[in-house]
Length: 321
Ligand code: NAP
Image (cartoon, rainbow, N blue to C red; front, side):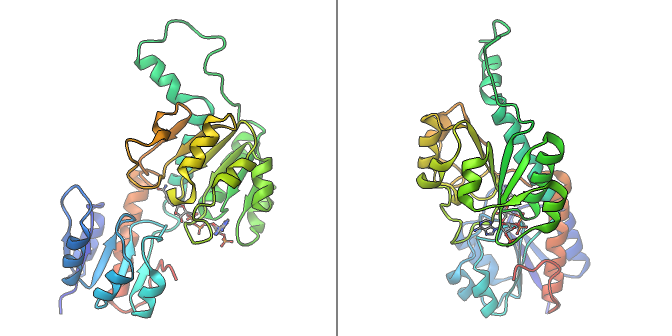
């Protein structure tokens, strides 16, 4: 029987080419929008494999109704949108795309940090709105990053890369949290593993890189933001559900936080009515962490290989469980 794979959004063509070379039929959503849950369900009924996006909700109900699937590969490293434990009980393999987006995402976190530290949002707005009248000796004063203390919340692949950039490039002291010690990271950056409380109390920069799980959902709430140092910067390139946007707004406006840089929001897309969008010290990007040509091409290739392996009944190159 011919195998069919649904790709829920347009991704680099390399994936489709690789799948077709294997004689796999490809159904691609060629419209420039996510599929509705009904469309996703209907197309999945005709497929044996799926390449999904982080915006596709692959929950118990969806999986139970599509238990004929053999493999799902998320076009992302994060896989909180998929109930992979339940998929496993149905014999559906679930894959993701780790490593190939590590540099892209750490570089984006760095971009947000630099932009926040130097008031880039207000400064570009000043130029564009015709208010640049003079060189300002006291205007746009930002935070110098060199020698500061940074906390990496979730020192995995992306968090460690961010820590290396901050330590090697900016002479920063690095604190980190994780579920286990990262000895090589400690050796190369003199980073120290600490409890979350200590990380938040000591750091000038807090950068979030942990996955969204039941332990990290709403981790940055009123209580934990209150522990952060006066004048510190909060960066989140992991998942929006890890921070509480109301609490973040409070600490950005009461003089505690100098600025926040978010690549991820809750919900996504962010509401245009979000109070955070009105703040000059909150920079928001539309979830573009892995959006480099190189990363997205490699992600497409891993997805194709994951699918081919899954359809052949082999173990996936990048499996989430
Ligand atoms: P990773 O290598 O698995 O790293 C995640 C780290 O978080 C691990 O070191 C893990 O510790 C740690 N962790 C888990 N639970 C924690 C907790 N409760 N408190 C503190 N640390 C905890 O994953 P990655 O490749 O670096 O990706 C990290 C996340 O970034 C992804 O899950 C995804 O949500 C997000 N992401 C976003 C974008 C974007 O476009 N903005 C792009 C890529 C990834 P242990 O190693 O000790 O288990």
